[in-house]
Amino acid sequence: MDASKERPNEVEGLRLIRAFLTLPPAKRAEVIAFVEKLARVHGRPEEGAKASPR
Image (cartoon, rainbow, N blue to C red; front, side, top):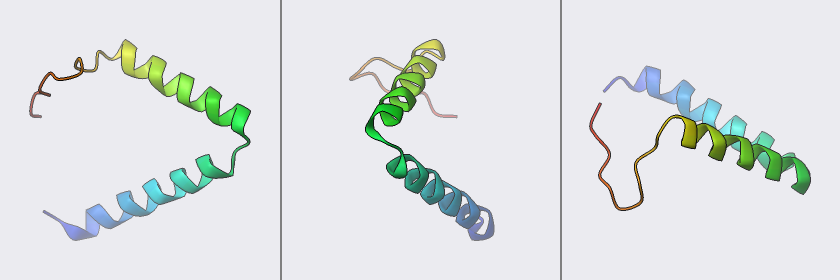
């Protein structure tokens, strides 16, 4: 595992979370709906099903 590659991903993730939390509630709902739609389109596993390893 390369820590130098992992840190920028963590930082970017925290920036995205902070940006999401600063949105007004209506915009947050739009983002959540968009992400849920993407998850359905890309066929996430059903609840209780095991995800396949990459």
